[in-house]
Image (cartoon, rainbow, N blue to C red; front, side):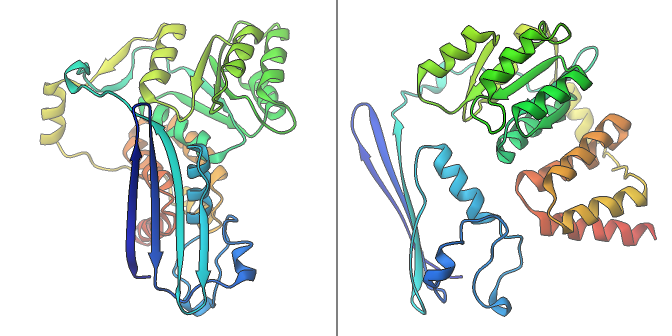
Length: 322
């Protein structure tokens, strides 16, 4: 695909800024029939021989991200002419002063026992974001797709904190909060309600029903860590200059799991089963601290949805071990 033009139009006033993004390519175009399914996950349209290598997740993820920011991804196309994608976002104007931003040492871990965090959200991208933020700090993470599944997991696993979305199928976050408070085993657990809703009523309702804190989406790492530190009484481990210099001068050898585990991870990657991959990575993270560099590399591939690159990397390591 050749990108012919990329447009950014900014319309500004004192309170808000409207951004319009537009990308036009000169490819083979998309038929009206294929336009109906192009935003569905794992869909790839057009002649098979002309399709690029991939899993068919890019447009589905882009659409979800744009909608999370309050916009809508649009498309128009002509066969043998090209295709245009565009969207608009209305964002608040922020008075940013770098001199007011506090400089803090990076957090690299937690003193004492690793807290257990249960993430309940029907959106895979939202769950992945929290996992990618907390797993490198040695939090133990489990996830569930809805409130009903989350309640079962909480009873079984007994997490220290539950981070729950509010709008979900089967059982929403409000009902989950209510059920958690009715359980003798879970009523004292930390509950953080999370939502992208612009209405204060959702925040107020979740707090009134018993959540300890509210985490707006898109999630800000500083806010999440502040809430966990405050309510779980955590003490952070910070990276200092001496640690950083020592680490730079001493190369870290990557330790790999057994070949049977590598083959299982490779099979899940070929199937694009991201949920199962995340579960396997979480199990590995708990099994051996020496696997942390390997876990981090796996998480970086998943964070960027680079399943093809991950598959090739795992396949290479499997061949090396044989």
